[in-house]
Structure formats: C-alpha cells, structure tokens
Image (cartoon, rainbow, N blue to C red; front, side, top):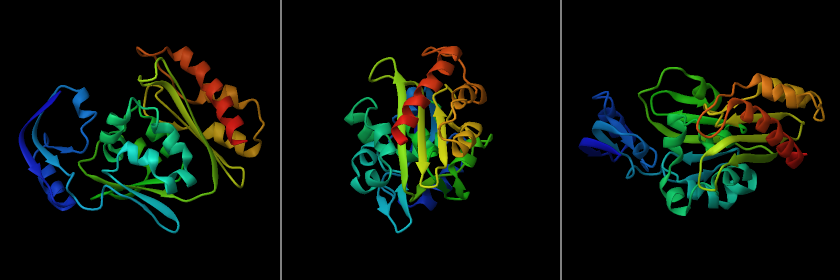
Length: 260
C-alpha cells in the first residue's frame, strides 16, 4: 500500500515533469500496480493518465512506438505488434489475469527496471530503445545498466522492426506467480542471436558471450555451459542460485529449438 499527501493531474508531460522535480518524494502515477507492493508515503502523486497520445501503439515504417501508458493487455492483443514480435504477447499473456494486465503499464515497468519483469526480458532481446523526457533516446540495455536512478519520465518505448524468429520461456511455481527464471531469444536472417535472461532474480541482462557463441555456430553445444557461467544468478524465496543455473540451460535449449 502507498499513500500520498497531494495529487496533481498533469495534462502534459512537461507539467508532469515540472511537478515531479519539485520534491524528491514526488512520484509519477501510471497504473500503480507495482507501487502498491511497497509501503511508502509520497509527497505528491503526479497522474499522467490524461496526457494525450501516450496510451497508443503506433506502427511506423521502420519501428513501433509504444506510449508509456500502454497496458500489458494492449501489448497482448495488438495484432500488428504481434505479427512482428510475438515474443512480447507471449511474455505478458500469462501474467496473473486480465484485470492486472489492463492496469499494468509498460512505462512504469521499464522505468523501474523490475528484476521479476517478464516484459523487460522480452523487450531486451529486440532492438529496443527508451525515450525519456529529459534524457532523450537511450538503448534499453544501456538504460538498464545505469547505476543511478533518473529523475525523469519515460515517454515511450521504440522497437525497431526486424525479421526475427523469437521465443519466450519461463518457469513459475504456479500460474499466477512471478517467474523463477525467464529467458527470451531472437534470431535474425543473418543468424545473429540475442539472448536475454531475467528474474535471476536481478533485472534482465543480455548474455553476450553466449550470443557470440551461437552467432558463430548455432549448434555449438558449449553454449549451455556458457550461459550458466556468464550470467550471475542468486537465490531468493522462489529458487536457489544452483536451481536457476540449471534452469538457464534448460530454457535456452527450449528457446533455441523454437527459433531454429
């Protein structure tokens, strides 16, 4: 549960940003699905739900632009997006239920870099960029690797169009639970492979050594040891470090078979 002292309904991103930076305890409100998981008291809650055009998925000639207020349900059901990138709908369609997917927003999920996020893992295996109001356009991998949190607003996510074969894999203890481990793999027409691993339980990251290995030889079996060694896994209530290491090889095998 979270509480706030003041409420500010912004009509533009500029208004929202100006209010956000007035106090370090001001916060942006989107769907608020994950804000409720904590127990925090904020000064001013800045509502961006009425800002125009940030709740749409726009297909362009070379990319998709996904506004910050686009819900998981929109990502799941958008036919044009699914045609190019089925990995996105495959990553979100099994998250809890339709009610939550109607409420959860892409902007909040990506900006807060949730380690348990299935969606971030799927986006990371694509050519994905985030657009920040003050920070400009940044490659998703670079944004995730930043150590210092930004006082900024994520306006939209951009995914460059590519002809890809993709796969999303995860293991959960129950259908409505968070993933014990998740993985997304993409392969382009040149045979280049991207592998992202998340819920380890830290935030998602690309497995560069494994990617290089498979891009040189897609059938190189040594990759199953490489993926266990190059990615750092830890233990939490959902699984041990050793269990996640074993899962990573198993999920990679399933994903590679799917994109072959």
